[in-house]
Amino acid sequence: MGDMISDDLLDETYDRLRATGPEFEGWLSNHGPMAADALIRMGCGDEVERWLDGYITRLDKAPATRWQIDEEDWREVIGDPSRLGDWCALFARLVGEEHWSELLTRWWPRLLPGAVASAGHGLIRTGHVVRALRERQTPQRLEELALALGYWAARWQPLPAHPAPTGTAPPSRALGAVPVIASSGGIRTRLADLGQSPDWPASVARLMPIADTEQIPAALDHLVDAAVTRYPQWAHGSPIMLVHAATAPRAAALVVPSLPPNLWLSTYETAWAVSAAISGAYRPATAPPPPSRRERQITTAEDVADRARGTGDEHAIKFAEVALESHRRENPNALAVGARAAVLIAPDDYDETGA
Image (cartoon, rainbow, N blue to C red):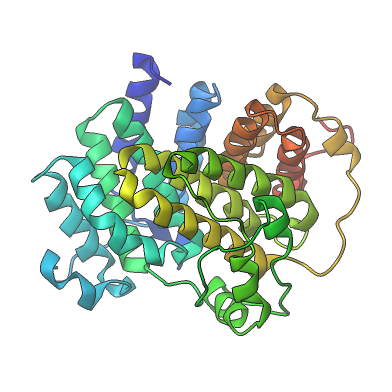
């Protein structure tokens, strides 16, 4: 990003979304800040205002406060969604009392064990705004950080029990070994069922551990690339939910530069486990369909960005940004994956000519 027009546009987006809640229509996550950020970074900033005009009509108002949460009592109320407004209010106070990076460092070990909450959206929203804060600190970005952390704390949910990585498999092979479970329903139900699978702990342990802390930023990129590459094999089972197997570890990669190195390893191991859990919870047992004609017509980075933008779907937009980043890291599969995501997530937005 970096230019003043884009900087101002992101802050204007945060201003427009200030009165909206982190969730709407039940448990659906408010993707407004994240999708707008992705559009800007893909060079589609001129589309943000129009896209937001439509999206914001779906959102609920910001949640009301009930009673104040004091930081020293955090263990008693973490993961209580009925206190969503109170959690957001707590972080709104805290971002006004200390530098945002100090706040993030203190709370990161508390929040990280619950990173899978709401399919990783607390983590993902935090990743987007931390990147923006590193570029420029503004009141709007500080307020967005408070909302992201408050949402994460209210929805905090631990993963099924699993060991640390001790195996020999690279991310792609380890991710390919996550179990297939016969489950349905919401993510909480699926994660509970995943925890009952005898293959779950072994699949997490199968990943090769990281010996050198300095390797972790690159290792997170490898993990994201692996999840992007696996997406077309499984996405027909749940094209929206499996997006988060890539966007969650990518969010961790966005945060790591703002954390002290002693928190990097736990961040990497958690990002891996979250990606594996989402993959296992939604991985289908059936083989993927062959690429459609619509997918084959999307061949360039510009095509991927245009198709994602054209769908208007927040998940397609967010995933396109991640796929394009993976493409720039020379992942040979990334453009085709971005094409498949756009077509599967919003199939009704295409005619038979691919227009």
